[in-house]
Image 1 (cartoon, helix red, strand yellow):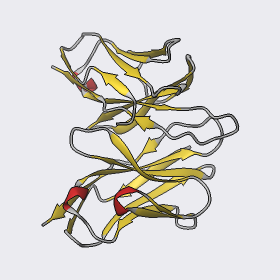
Image 2 (cartoon, one colour; image 1 turned 180 degrees about the vertical axis):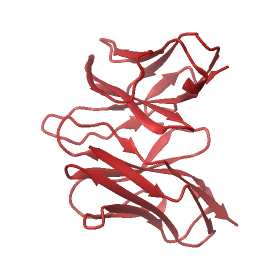
Image 3 (cartoon, chains in turn cyan, blue; image 1 turned 120 degrees about the vertical axis):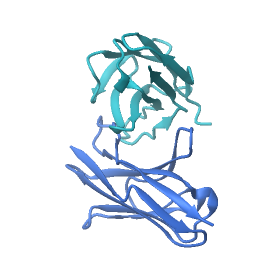
Length: 116
Length: 115
């Protein structure tokens, strides 16, 4: 158990709909990362938040958005869903230690999204 | 910028045989390198990592990897395969400079163990 929790575990929805995926980081971790794992694109970095602010952006579609709240949990919002958005969405978290450039990322179990 | 290439999307080895999963990387600055394992219907688990120091790193479950800068490689090995090693393995790289923390993953290698 990494200490990172994600809900829901599975989500089935229809094209055109909007969903929200939730991530709770490990206690004390300030950074949250979102990754998408799909058959077509493999494992891709989407976005990173650090202490409530967006820190880095990857291959995230404009239809997707994320935020990190004051209690440090994060939500990934996916809208106007398409069949190709079906994937496993992982959240990871890491701590921020002053003066250190390395902070291990701990991955949650993922949310499997199926768009029908 | 950084990228990872994993040679062989599927590798099969007999139980008790050597496991060798290949990973080559490119990075604009000294890299941090990782191997993750994913069991069916589960998340990613860190096997081992190279950040600085000794180039031969040992991980969990008897796996090890060697960072070879001249070959830009970080191959994963295990001397004797076990049935429980059957899983998908991902090599990942990130830049070592402060503030660049995103992981870039390879396409993965599915390891099958033959009894």
